[in-house]
Length: 189
Image 1 (tube, one colour):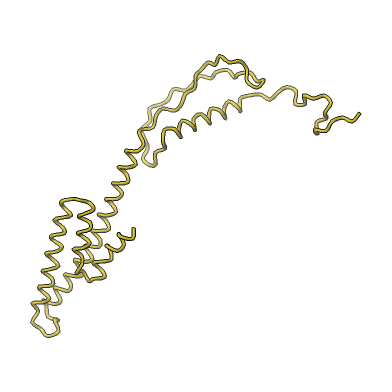
Image 2 (tube, helix red, strand yellow; image 1 turned 180 degrees about the vertical axis):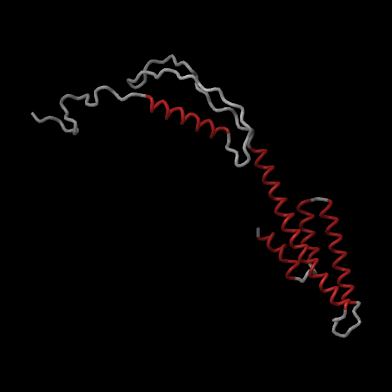
């Protein structure tokens, strides 16, 4: 981020004279032939504007050549700054998107537990009757952050466990110890 700010400000702070350095940085980072061509164009324009300023015959370089060269140098510097920011941000966004897309594969179907269990009742509660599972509908992936497949599987298992716990009925006798009153204190003898 600091380098992006530095190279974006370089052409503006140097009145356009160092715009070629910003374009050189962009061409090296993106490695696009278009950026190398723009580097050459920027350098040629900078040399041309300086030559035009130098060709001004007036003593204070306030003739049309000096004014045109100064205006062209500043305009080239501002255009370089804007182009650099747009191209650099797009480059790193594409790089981040490619890294993210390659990291996580497509979302698998949600976890479906086995329908029948051979074990007896657990913790004194009978097994709930198996409910028919809805058929998963084909989904198109939505744009945005993609969760890793393991997180999706864990979420599905937790949702299923929550549903099973909601369906279970509490025990018939909430006070299993007859010597104890409902407040949790024993009866005094």
